[in-house]
Amino acid sequence: MKIAMIGTGYVGLVSGVCLSDFGHEVVCVDKEPRKVEMLKRGEVPIYEPGLDVLMAKNVAAGRLAFTGDLKSAVDGADAVFIAVGTPTRRGDGHADLTYVMAAAEEIARALTGYAVVVTKSTVPVGTNAKVREVIARTAPEAEFDVASNPEFLREGAAIDDFMRPDRVVVGTTSERARKVMGEIYRPLFLREFPILHTDLETAELIKYAANAFLATKITFINEIARLCEKVGADVKQVSKGIGLDGRIGNKFLHAGPGYGGSCFPKDTSALARIGQEHAAPMQIVETVIKVNEEVKRRMVEKILDLCGGSVNGKTVAVLGVTFKPNTDDMREAPSLTIVPALVGGGARVRVVDPQGRREGEALLPGVDWLEDAYRAAQGADVVVILTEWNEFRALDLARLAAGMKHARMADLRNVYSPQDARAAGFEAYCGVGR
Image (cartoon, rainbow, N blue to C red):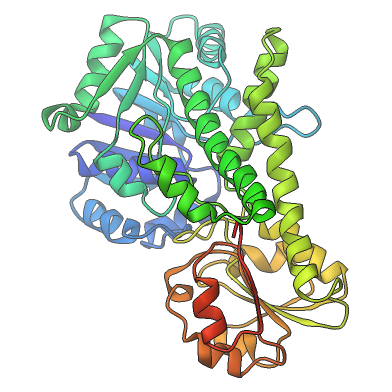
């Protein structure tokens, strides 16, 4: 099938590349000429393991192309995917649909025959109906259907998630659109991956409900971690104990500095707003948002306590600033709360992150960027593990401690045990929920 993918951000680029690997003819469209030229040169503007290789493979096979010309990409397409940004609207927490509606208008003017216009972006309930209205108003003669096809990609594991999904959700209103979507995802259907067909509104809400539930699990275990610290329990053992219950499961039960990234903060805020607008308050979700912010601030207090109540004049080595490993994404990362608080408290902050510097330099002013954890810790008063990159999971703790002015560790991801840290020479160690 011929597919146009509007938007080459994280979701659009990964989805376009993977769909081309299914054998479809895919053209990815972006408004930014510099980005299009970069993609044409085979350069990937985001960090996602394996994406560069898969992209090159399908470009070479003639199934994948990039352009800034939406009209030519949409001409003759069987499906047109909208994968543009839906950032949180400043002031009210709702998703900003400006880019979605602008794309819908431009698609309407470019349609030359029947096509399914598929919303891949995460959008509030009722958005696909509005997309349909915009297209119908802009091009009354256009022959089209609208479908909702939310994404469930984890940054750092997006290709595997697309190729081997837990489920594919497809919301449609006509049998014709359902058949087109079925053909697009036929390779997954043949391998018996679940494909759930729903109406538009249900598909839209599934995405928000899923992310809000996962954010709730993270926040719940962070609340339990705080209680563990008060009563002398170990949150890692608590997590294991409840995670072995098949009704609960062990995923997203790792205590830490709070959730971040491009999805959970934005989607929980949007779902809370949707509930308010429909007089069905999402009280649990609203509390999750509030507690998650408190968790980030509590991490700052941990570091201050480790340093005797103040970091003024002290050197702090921060290992990891992206919101999770295997991505360069800094959106809503806990580091954006924690590091500025340290700098504001008078600390000299050194940062090490394998992929975070490109975005982080502008977002974290007043810090020094280094390439090596041991160099960052040399002469430091405390080392903070903030993102659990693999290279921070197997540090020589004795070497790390030996080079520090004061061997103190704030292990905000519980990578190491207190016993191992002390045996390696750390005079003080604090984790989360231990």
